[in-house]
Length: 97
Image 1 (cartoon, one colour):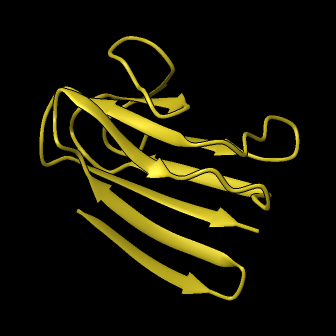
Image 2 (cartoon, one colour; image 1 turned 120 degrees about the vertical axis):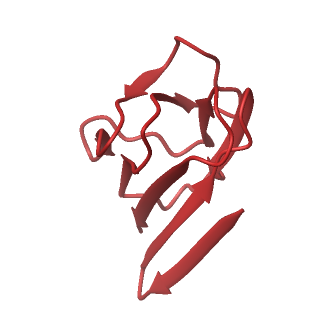
């Protein structure tokens, strides 16, 4: 389940993981300038550049507030996905254009 709120050129939202598979967080966006991801759950997640996140690979987002930010120095404008072994876990995100 995905929830999205748009404010000007910024979008904010969250997804609930399906567990055991990669979930698309953000589609490709050539206008992306900044993206922030926060793991609001009690379970470790892995953020991936691309549509296929896998366990133990990618950018680890630790439980209870682990976060990652993409800015002008490490920006990725392609798809971004997350892998979480457990279902029903929340990942919050924001994206600026």
